[in-house]
Image (cartoon, rainbow, N blue to C red; front, side, top):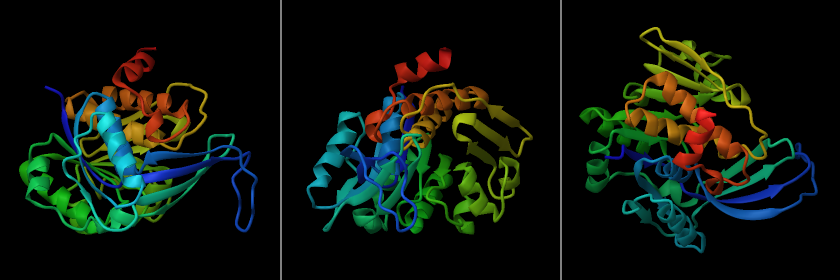
Length: 295
């Protein structure tokens, strides 16, 4: 039976432009190509879970605009169960993304319908209760994340939070987290200073810190400390690499893999993704992850 992961989070249409360099404050840069790509950290991670071989249900919201059907259809095409995806009045979420030739990016998100995801219903809680892993992010109201995490914690479902975008986390959320996934900037926001995974263990039992091309660092309250190198690849767009990593890690944990193996496999997922342009369109399949991990 495939591992069962429920993702609660955002769905956005990404409006992406490539440019030689990213603009600074008040600066205009002449760009190259423009495209629209279904995205949002929640939807991206749901697609990443499904493509990595997990059985995934997505709890989220889209608007009643022209983007809504494309966002829904993209998840369905990747094998995500969207029966819990609700439609609300108004615009869907939108992300404005600039990507430079060094594969660095700049992102501004307008939440739209994602901000209307303020409560969970009985069907949502039932799905969470049947899952091996609940995966959430912070592009939806934090109160909803707390509701989902508390429901999962109450029945023993592993609660995994990708704490992005960076923000301080309320105590009631920290108390029910099992696994925290952050990058270095997000870790600094949580700790109030530059921090290692070990520095965050007073907040949560297990901490995964992504380090970009340098791989990932891990620490837990059992005393395990790991640094897993990332596969060496030529990156062209890192926009969804973190989502690929996080979705694959959720699958690996749901499968019960040892943590070192799970982290290495998730690093391979992020590396495959970084070699391709776009958000959800760049997320790798299980076979692609396996191929790079074995290599």
